[in-house]
Length: 207
Ligand SMILES: [Zn+2]
Ligand SMILES: [Zn+2]
Image 1 (cartoon, rainbow, N blue to C red):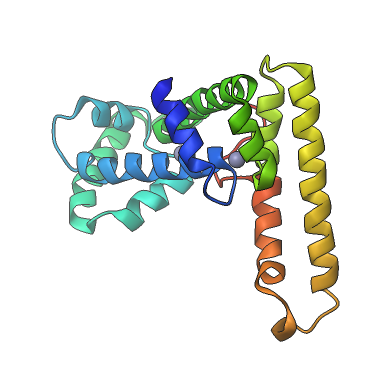
Image 2 (spheres, protein in one colour):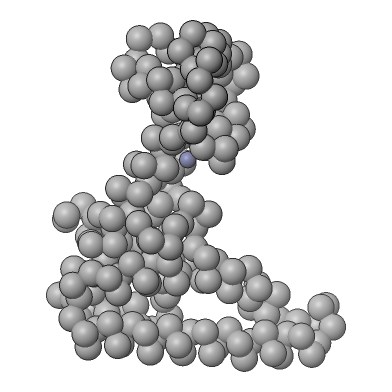
């Protein structure tokens, strides 16, 4: 938990949702290891992935982008062979699981609990967060479902209401200007609002 505490506190110095940033880095490291491991014979984790039919669409494509195509082909050959041998005859079993998504879900749980514990117990952290930090709404929803005390829940909700109002004001000024006259923060605001509303690409609302 201490390691998570340090990671979360450090992440507060970056702009977007700290949970999303940490998940993005976690996913990248997982995939960087996997793109090598999948091409290696005899890796038990990879054998399990083959049996469970690979990855979700997103992570299959990400694996392709991060891989040497010939190294990846060693994996795909085994994947095809397993598919022909044990799954082709049963189309009703072609559902696809994704071990990367499962690991990210577990990591999300740890970070949500870590965040709510630090928020609950450390005034310095609350103060720093209140200044100009935010959680994306899916992660805020998950924090709300932890046993953090009600006054901190209220504080977090009113903080995010303020953040949403600020973005509304920035965009209201943005839409009344020529693009070339707009400030940097105005031009960035649509993307920042989308990140705030939906979070990291793999974020799910309820997990
Ligand atoms: Zn987030
Ligand atoms: Zn996935």
